Amino acid sequence: MKGIRWRYTRLPSQAEDTVSGKESEDEEEEAAPAPPPEDPVEPQLAEAGQVLGASEIRQSCPQLSLHLPSRVTGHPWRLAFSTSRDGFSLRSLYRQMEGRSGPVLLVLRDQDGQIFGAFSSAALRLSKGFYGTGETFLFSFSPRLKVFKWTGHNSFFVKGDLDSLMMGSGSGQFGLWLDGDLYHGGSHPCATFDNEVLARQEQFCIKQLEAWVLS
Image (spheres, rainbow, N blue to C red):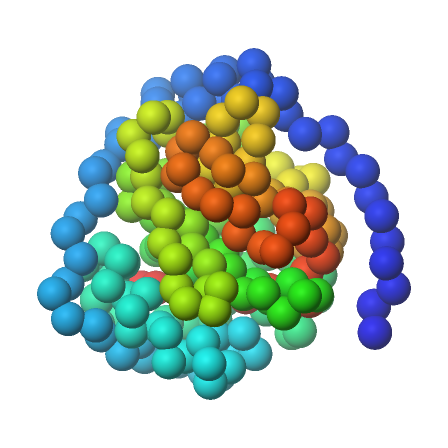
């Protein structure tokens, strides 16, 4: 069992969010979410995962597929990164994303047994500012699926550096935040997705994390 290792990382301020968000507008044109398919589609998992492979979650995957853009329908879900296989390291996650351009489903289980995550319209990578499109969303199984779509209030979709990965922001808070060791994380309501706290508490410890490429 992994021991508790507390590591404190300075989070970007609201002002930094605003500057980074402006950069993202110059880097990448926004895209409105595509209409979902009418009927649930059973995802094709190219291999078994410890989080998505759990029977109680796999039963909900067809409902989750309703919220994915139509361009990924029919593509197998490939496990690009897993903490059980690749270790607890954000750098390792970025390495596994190299050369990939397709959208990514990030799903994790925390130490309380809660399962939640995010869909990113692009592969996760290091970035100076926020990137992504309005297809990006957050979700949780608590235990029923809840999906939090883009509100249109800002474009703070995804931002990654060596110390943290952030998804959704506003007023100095992040919808989902993971540290560089992929062990500690946080979730707060944010303007990007108008989401609830994804875990039982705003701060959580990660038990397992997987990144699936949907292309």
